[in-house]
Length: 297
Image 1 (cartoon, rainbow, N blue to C red):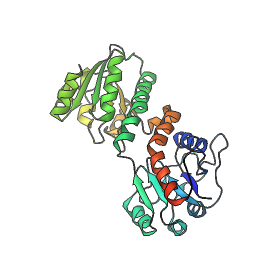
Image 2: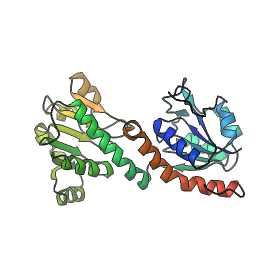
Image 3: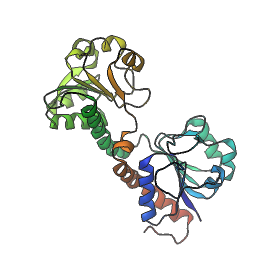
């Protein structure tokens, strides 16, 4: 049988697998030995699992240059070794957020198909919803004041920044958007938001009760953190390494939190449904091409 094998990931991948199973796809899991409820986790070596797969789905964090895969429910560190590539069938579809160049080169040598979805607009836009809600949930839990009537700074006005600003405003917060791009600042102003050129952050950062960073580059440096309110809550949702000088923030006891993978943590079923929506057309195409007579259920 040609399986869909889900290798690593968190609860959103489990939710995705359940939806694929409900659609009558043959699904196996690798790296979920410690998941709290039973799943069709394979105990087979990864090489064997890959050899039986028509589709391999990996986390949005993907595979790093050492072959390591994020697998919080695996009993041991999960990684693809050189020996695992030999069994991959030509045409096997690999779907991951990102894959290192070295691993991609090896997969292409085995004539695998590769889709890196980490920067796909549809996936990023849909994931912005649980990300924004998760950031707001964390801010409520980590602070001793309400968001309502508070002064919130949102650094960045991309997919997450826009949705987060909108939701904060809906909760009654006074929201300021900080960005470098004049077009982004102009758009934020048309949404009824306050705006601040990013280069002026040092001058005004002391005014804010909450700071949300969405920019994946160092924005809140030591000289800026020196001027924040003592009771400020800082939520960084940017991808690694984030946009906050984490070492300095922790050293001086700031209420700082770098939150990664929020969709899978705060809304795993919704996050799994998003993956299903985006990935299923790729999977249908794969099965129609390589499984004669197959039709989606």
